[in-house]
Image (cartoon, rainbow, N blue to C red; front, top):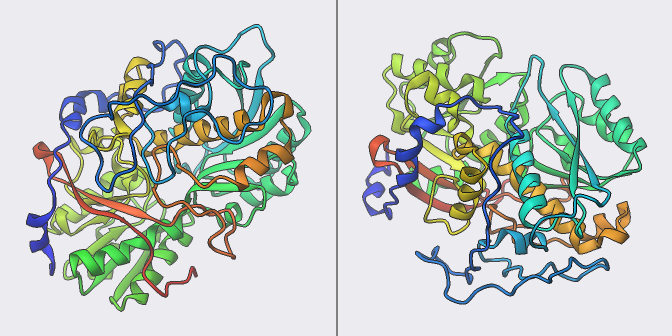
Length: 471
């Protein structure tokens, strides 16, 4: 493929953490064990903004948070670093310290996700939320000293289930805000029933209904917006001249595939797009139909459940791993279980890569997972997203003030949020797209996996190509 010679000029980043944790990653995902060890103390110093991540923490410690969480609204949580920096002091990001007072009434938030049915984008986003809440309550002072508590509601298969979750959260006066995982079914019904009564912190959206909400923030971006940068990277870094894209019909990837393919059309790279039934057991036929063997780059826009069969199909057809440009959804324990290792693909990620210890935000994050006994989730991108959602919402709640929590005050904090986003893109612009006012990110970075040698950064954060418009 054209542009492959650029690999030798990339700064090599060997991620030793992945070598150590292969056995841990193979552990079962989706654990709901609440008897984990105490969360890590994330009192690391805060990095000053830098063009390149610093090799060591800064010598000067971040400003100590107040001993008692403020009851009145605060302009900024204590010791928050600059927007273009990296978060290393997680408790300061939230705005508190120490353990919440278990004798105080909890502050409740809702959590909704799609799982238990025919379509599951992720069920580990839940774990990220749980890990964050445990950390917030044990290390970051809760919400103004009050414990943070999560009330869950899940969509399995129907629109009615989304409606029921929206009604449940809207009618519960104790629930002050909602976190949502990626939902394919029931999303519109959920928002209609919620009726704008509670602000919503979303992570990555796979349904356009998230993006048009006035009371929501999709922190890591809508799928179409964070897949469009693939075309920028393919054109400017890899120099490809032809591309193939495969996606499963009706499995939450239709809009993502449309956004990604339209970006390739914007930069003038011919792209062949082929869909396949979500229940297809083998993907060699759609790959052949797309002409994947002759294309410069092959891109799966898939859910985690399809990762193993996609890798098996490309190998059966003799398509080299380094011709595949994929999202990070395959960097999960289930891929290790099915293949014995991650495919040596190029991976795009719209956040920090949680197995890149050169990113200053990653070590304090992985320390928390280790100390909570959740090592198996270190490489899971959805756990990272859920963790960041809960931490960022807690930041907003503390900034509003525990005695002043309302839809209006929390939404005001959400609307005024310009970053930094914990473990997120350094480019945050909620409201950039008029057609998607809730979308906060459209930047993505790239890594290539080299097996025993770990991961190498293949490209820094870039946005969609100039002139691209969401379909």
